[in-house]
Length: 401
Picture 1 (cartoon, rainbow, N blue to C red):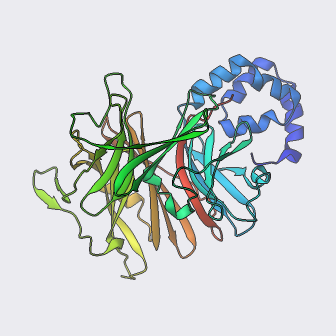
Picture 2 (picture 1 turned 120 degrees about the vertical axis):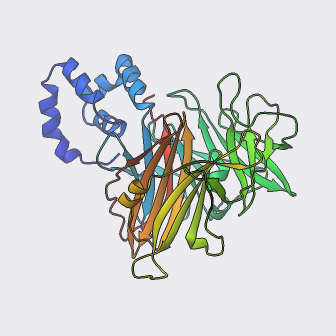
Picture 3 (picture 1 turned 60 degrees about the vertical axis):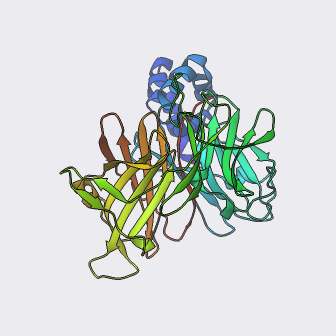
């Protein structure tokens, strides 16, 4: 984690004079990156943080905390992973360069693919490898290429991948991705326990296998194999089914408004007017138009809608629209925009990252499917001017071992 030990010594001495029960309570009020950093400050801090009762209570609180991670870098210089949670009001810096030094990438910069729990995946373009990093135990692991062979960074699609970790504190994970092979959707799964890949051709969804959920309460994993303007191809891995199934939801661009009238979305003629962001069986549509100056290189967000795969897997169904007053709060001009989307425990989280003349802006939105409420989480400036964006991901379940 971010190293500022020269300023920590006086504070550490003062804290050590406090009763251990009080220090225990103070440490639990911190977020996990701060706790991990404190563990390196002194032996007394490390003793408190390593206590099993502290670990259980800390993990109970932090396992449900959602993080937004942004990887930024300067060409062939230090790369920094920045993290932010709604439990805090500032970004945390996690240096990555030194951790990855034991693995030689010929001075190549890596790309941040995704994160889940304590694991973070990075991709190399030159050798086509994926690297798994455990930021808590500070260990690095190469993932062998799948049967498709080495893949460059442009081959990885965020909506077509999933990183699944075990119970809190587990050092096991599965890395899944969907791809077309000989015009057939195939699910590839890497198991860190066996260190082997398995590939399964997905079956067409004509056997009545439910695409969402199961009687055990475990939800399906959705991976986008292809996204088109009118139809998507998804692979759903469901506990109730022996093999993954193919879903082909169609999108007609229509929804029923609150007043009962049928409305039609914007045309696909201009890709800048409508951005689609996919993830976990959902699709977010970001509608934009030219700014006040009508500068064709600058856009302004005018509306955001959420759609989801229907229960039969055959169409995209309208879910909700961000209230206009909330959209106006986020109204800033942008030149380019990208996004990421995830669903976990009934909450859909979306992040939109935009750039306008070298200045980056990040929007964090959440939609609670049960209460049908939207939440906008203000994200402080990440101070990315002069840096390159090299990946963004949500993650939950960051825990102490």
